[in-house]
Amino acid sequence: MYTKEQKKLVSYVRVRVKELMNQYPAKAHGFDHAKRVAKWAVLIATAEHANIFLSEISAWLHDIGRVREEFFGHKKRHHELSYEMCREWFREDKRFDALSKEEKLQILYALRYHWNDMANDYAVAWILRDADKLDGFGKLGLKRSLDFFEGDEGKIEVDLRLRYHTLYNLRSRQAKKIVQEKNMLEPVEKYFKKWLKEKIEPVAL
Image (cartoon, rainbow, N blue to C red):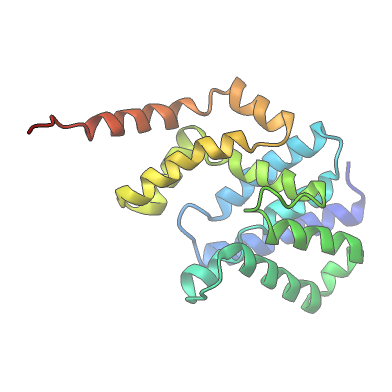
């Protein structure tokens, strides 16, 4: 599937991201999240006959900016910071010279816009978004949301409502198939409905 050079780079990126995220563990967006997103990205890219190598690299790198967002107080959002950090890595680390200019641009675009469902100039971008979205479903996705917002009911409510928006905006057939076959919406929906019912109180004049 990959050339020898590509395998080396994927391995190197995985190790570098792991070291960074182990040193600065971001809530619900640590190395385990990156690992799952990389797995989903490979599955989706394979099914869509897209660039598997660039999809996996982008998945490993997509949340590196959370380190600067959560630990160093940067005001920009993590996707912009991931884009900026990756540019720095490309410039400073000779290992990335194995990538062509076009490959680097595709990765940077995917990182910068892994929140924007209209940014579709490269397949790598929407593959990354679908892979990232998949990790918000299922029991694990629900747990990530609850852990990330630490009991803030307002933010949890908004995040759970966004799951329906996320489901609607899945682009690849493979991602939609995974959610359906694994019944990944059910835990989120069950929790959310229970939460909403608990908020119902009698009304009175």
